[in-house]
Image 1 (cartoon, rainbow, N blue to C red):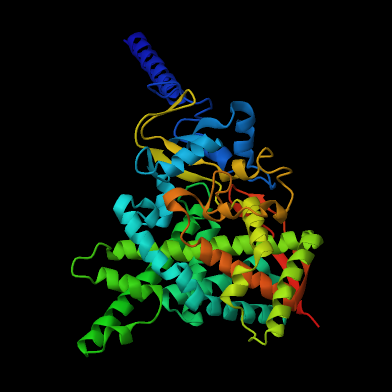
Image 2: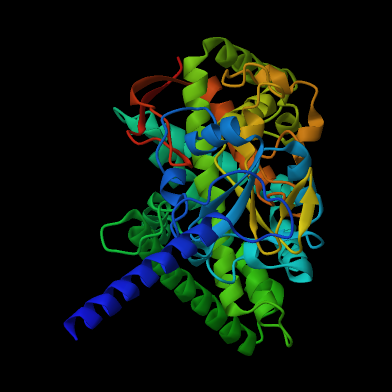
Length: 490
């Protein structure tokens, strides 16, 4: 009897081992109707997620992608947070992914990232609903709005911030710029005053610290802090939305005209949408939309501006050329007897500034990957991308390709001279995305950066005190901060 039990136990153990080996083999060799790209699926369930999030102190293509490009070529397969993914550094495949949205591909992000940004965020919307929300945002952040109302507000925020920083012994630039941009965005989006914006800002700062991290929801992890920050921020946004809805209802009941009830912020547009007789936009969609807009408007701009200041400090000849452009604007303004404020025409004349911004975001590669999902089996260059698989377009692999950008790790704004086509995205420049989902806030971000650089180089001098180390995890970070001292010019 005992021998029989031992034999049965051994047989069960052997069957379990065989089952596990079979599962591992199936994981590493997923089924496909054709030839899959080369690559490794890593460990079962975990895939190669740990390698993807490993830090890399380099401006270069993230180590995870760099090593696989060398081994497998510009198209390879992997598995990230439980999803099979094809990674593309191939410009033709990238172009196809962006141009064939809704036909061959659709917007997609891993579940853990969707949880961070919200199940109803604009990135999850497809087809007509996405276009509807995009047009809704563009009505407020389009060129006309930037020219008529945003330009003066950005200038006011920049002037005040730089003036305050110049009285301090030191400033951690990333945090200081983040505060400046966030308070401006919170005011323009939600009508928040600085005191209330400060409460919301803390939640967003907690959120950002764990944004691109391994999705382990346990106390003490970056992902846990990120999700708690999101929860706190959403509670504030919910409160703001409810307050505005009640205010509109009360004023409407009193017979106050609709134009008089408006605050002049983006929340006005949101309230109009969700209070229609047959609204297309739900409260939850509106909250996720405002959350994403707040996050995108301050996080990417503050990182890019911090890097721009560091690069200018490290490259005096570029700083000199930039300063000449902006001092020329001041001279022409004085000669014409015009006011002290920046005009739209002056802003549009900042051609070298635009080159500096493009070169900065090319090197920054703030978005390490842009995700889509295959809607059907797709054949490309002899490989099959199976239906349902994720596709990660890798901007750093394009932006840092020496065949496209000679000496790619060098800060050289002049490489963008006479290349206006990149301003709306191209096969070789995707810092703001591409195709239908080209970033709706790109023009607002460029405006803020241009105005900031104008006042920085014409009215102030600065020196680096400490920090400035760059780490990719795989997003861009300044782990030790970037501490500078600013002083007004004589």
